[in-house]
Every structure is written in structure tokens, then in C-alpha cells.
Length: 62
Image (cartoon, rainbow, N blue to C red; front, side, top):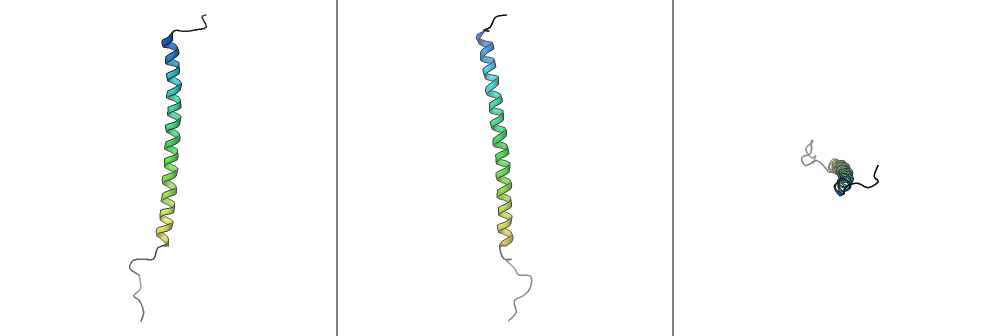
């Protein structure tokens, strides 16, 4: 069995490795964006819950 291969086989193997690395990076970025969205929504709801009501439910007493 020859140790080396044709250049197209070697180049094809290198492209496959790059593609799998790109998939892992894209998956990591997707998960990171989902986490960032969840955190931003959580803090947004905390801030909005802390704000006073625009129209109070009871009329003000004199």
C-alpha cells in the first residue's frame, strides 16, 4: 500500500476537516446567540416588571 495519495485525495480530506470545524463554529455561535437572547429577555422582563403601572388600578385618593 502506498503511503501517499493523489493530491486530490489529500485536498479533499483537508476540505472535509475544514467543513467539520466550520460546522462546530456555527453550532457554537448558534448556541451562544440563543443563550444571549434568553438572558436579554429575562432581564428585560425583570426591568419591565419593576416599572410602575402606567394607569393605576385604583383612582388616587385626595
